[in-house]
Image 1 (spheres, one colour):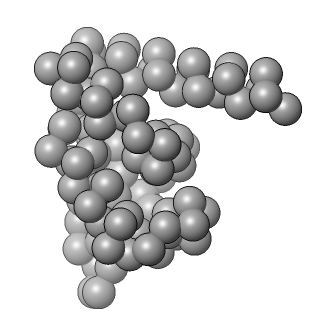
Image 2 (cartoon, rainbow, N blue to C red):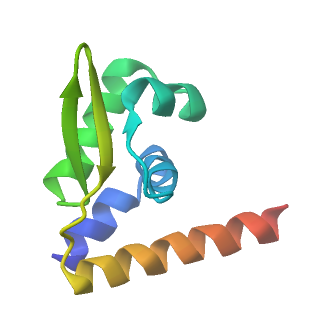
Image 3 (cartoon, rainbow, N blue to C red):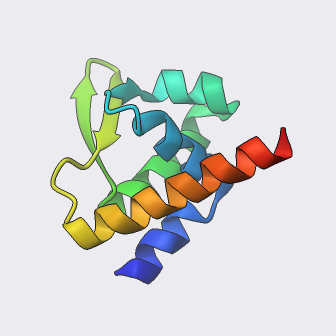
Length: 96
């Protein structure tokens, strides 16, 4: 399971989506498309990968799909996710 999670998070657009969702809110694909400069089809593919890894859940809202971090992540998955998010934040600060 750790390899599937790390593999899902290894792609920059998917990691960016997870960073957006890390605020604890629910976000539609349209919001993530705009913030990550991704097309709808590309964003949907990436979100499907994150969903298959168990990191996100989705909810249909009219023509949009809204995503959030999976609230039922097992503790070991949450620990991996938190470590990756912390590392990404540190890397971003060092690059600035």
